[in-house]
Amino acid sequence: MTFLFLGYSVFWLLLAAYVAMLGARQRRLAEEVADLSAALDKGAGRRMG
Amino acid sequence: MSWARALAAIVWKDLRLEWRTGEAVLTPALLALLLLLVIVFALPPAAARLEGVFTASLWTAVFFAGTVGLGRSFARERAEGRLWGLLLAPVDRSAIFLAKGLSAFLFLAMVALVTMPAFFAVFGQRLEAPLWLWTATVGLVLLAYSGVGTLVSAVAAQLRAGDVLYPVLLFPLLVPVVLAAVHLTDALLETGGWGTARSWVHLLIMYNLLFWGVPYLIFEYVVEV
Amino acid sequence: MTVPTTRPKKTAAVLLAIAAPAVVFAMYMALIWAPDERTLGTVQRIFYIHVGSAWNAYLAFLIVFVTSIGYLLRRRPALDAVAASAAEIGILFTTLTLATGSFWARAVWNVWWTWDPRLTTTLIMWFMYIAYLLVRAAAEGEERRGRLAAVFGIAAFATVPLVHFSATWWRGMHPNIVQFQGGTPRMNMDPEMIVTMLVAVAALTLVNAALLAYRVDLEHLSRRVALLRERVRLEVES
Image: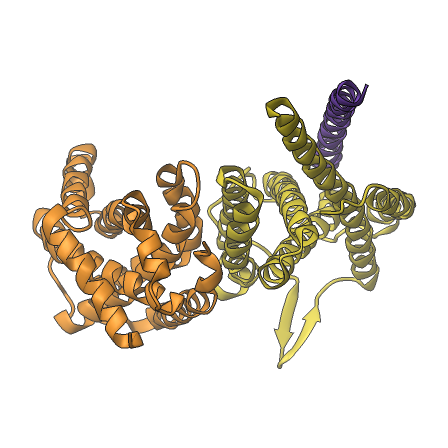
């Protein structure tokens, strides 16, 4: 394995890892938004209904 | 209250408090001397005479011991609820920074006065350069240290676990000062003067201008209530 | 506080659409089109992504610096969001710089690391912005977090010129591509290499922008979550 190949591979791997990390964070946050919104709607429903 | 009087009042308060508690001079000085002992035990016998070992040991001890006193500069005020008193006083916030910075400098100077002779004695190192040159060099280094140290102390005092974070936040910022201290000390020991290391003096002056000037201008924002 | 929900995401997608072909093209130029370096051979091609990463790290930290000043003056949460995002991305690019540089070092100097001024100061810059993230994590409350991070973000920027000029102020192993000959700066590289370098820097800048847009969107999302949590908490208590 040449250092050139390794160098470029590590570069792209690290970038990809960061993007994957952001993606996972986004999914988690979106889930939480959905959960919290549902909880709020339920609460509002109970008060009004 | 006039600006200068407010400054003097805060510095005087810090000095009096130090006389009673000893946490900004006594404890750091003790720590520095303990570090000296640890270094002496950790070094193999011949190593002490090697080039650069004295300088590295000396400044490691001074910079680490300094964080103990410096880090508490603002945390101390907060713990007793005194920070509110300080901030509510009709005093320019920047004056508070200058006062705390000045106290910090005085305390660091006292620590150095105790620590450095001890290091010279234990390592058997001769002065090699005139005392006034040593004073000027160490003074510039400690001035820079107290400026940036006070700024970071004000930030860390407002953070969770700020005491613990303080060295981590401070040391990256302090690197140029450490480098300057080491290079100038080596120059003084080897040539008896600043010689070719004079550029480090310029760097220290620039650093001081930046890290006293900028916090002075923005301190209003640093300690907002 | 109004939280923009769709714009940053769309911006990120658009930037990615431009960045992707640019990156592919830059890779073609760097790996195939550019000539081999006379003395170092093919491994020198790491240089293109190495310089691209370094410049984007500087750019990201410059963004942190500017938005930090802006936040202290204007107190817009959007500015703080950009500062936080740019810091993270700057750390990423610094890591990439250190990593690619490490492979170069191993190939050319036979060591993975050396305490050369440029490398050492870059490592310090890395620690500095990690410390910035620590300040953000340890601050309680959005106002305090924004304000203290801004102060630290301003102070931390002092490291960037230190890194950049370290290679010229102090003698070390790190190569200097800009030489001053009789007062005028000149680059001792083949014109094809210079072009490739500029293309690589440009392509990675687009990647930087795309990442920034995406990350800022996440920051807003995370603030929305905090707001919702607060509302749920109030609901439960009432």
